Length: 25
Image (cartoon, rainbow, N blue to C red; front, side, top):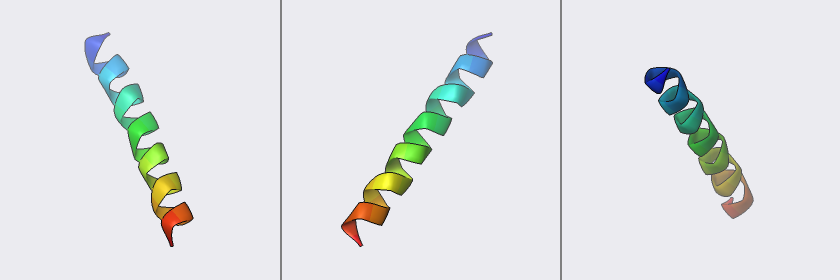
């Protein structure tokens, strides 16, 4: 369960990072 939670959290962070990079360009 812990690994699944971490994977979901990392997924959200990566999505946010993509949005930030896209808005900066």
